[in-house]
Length: 490
Ligand code: AMP
Image (cartoon, rainbow, N blue to C red):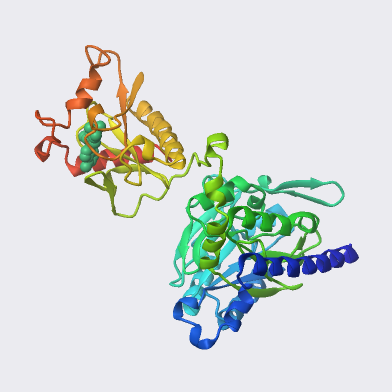
């Protein structure tokens, strides 16, 4: 086995040299390690100073304190070498032999482990990605935990947390058997890419790497860097690790950062290692040596943009044939107070009750019927045909989800779902939107009378938009309805 691993390694190193060379010649760009050193000092401007990431490789055991000390030493070393953000692998806090041990050692987000890393991030003034934290499950589910990837900012605050979506159940007879579903609660959603000093980071964990639709989705949402903190087994790592990481980088034309567990953790568990950073051309630009280690790479988003520009894969997608990557549950955070543009109007976030990366759902200031709500693309697009395929798919997914909720809330028997595309079709607000109205038997003398009502309810007699705010609902009234509706999506 050892000989096989060495053979594989030597082959990979040779291959890596070839790929990096190809990257230099094909794109006319030097590999990132030589870019800074080859430039004359006077030619360097501040904008040439690229952010630096550090990717760690650990052999975690069940000893939490020892693990923390190793991580701290690696993070401090990375800081001294100029890292802006440091990445730790799945199970960075501990790795146990049995499910019971995992459950007993699990902590909450308010526990000691997370507190220690928050303090470390703040004292060293750097960002941390903590892949795969065993987060204690809810009180009514004591036999399971969440596998949570946490990003901490340089102020020591949690910037984002993501619960692993794809759980790893593996049974290769006589070699390795692991059943994560036995003790882990699967995540429920993708987290929108996180703004960090190194770029927009898409969060994933280990086994998620095998699901390219997740990486495509994150990149479609703006991710520039994909992260896969991992604990790959020896068997699967040897066969698939680097191929998968490089594939995700190449097909998405983005950076991939993959911290890893390595070596023998206990009698039952051995992992593959090879923590690495892959650039948008698919070149491995940093890789840890054997054992516990940290290695660094520059993130060059300008280079990423060049790769995307020279081969615009995203633009070449045949969405007409394969559709658009959509996330049926892409609820984005609603909590921050802000305003949104709705045509000529400004919408306060308190009246928004559902939001995805591309669409908004909010209550109506002058409903034609109780429960009359609106869904629109976040981008102020005027006409139906101006929407991108992604916006269209997302908006109609939202319409479906909102319809279900409104239907239930108002005990309706039918729904009017209407689009008025352009002024001569009755559109007053120059921003594509869908009206959703819960209907009941006999709510109008004739069912289609609603279209006349829709045509007139927000207009003056001369057809101009009604501006008499006395006829509108109060903000408090609308916010109360939105707040009630929000709870129905959880
Ligand atoms: P349309 O006439 O099809 O353009 O519909 C516009 C809809 O947006 C109407 O139902 C209005 O009552 C509603 N509306 C306009 N401005 C606001 C606003 N600021 N907040 C909530 N609803 C609004």
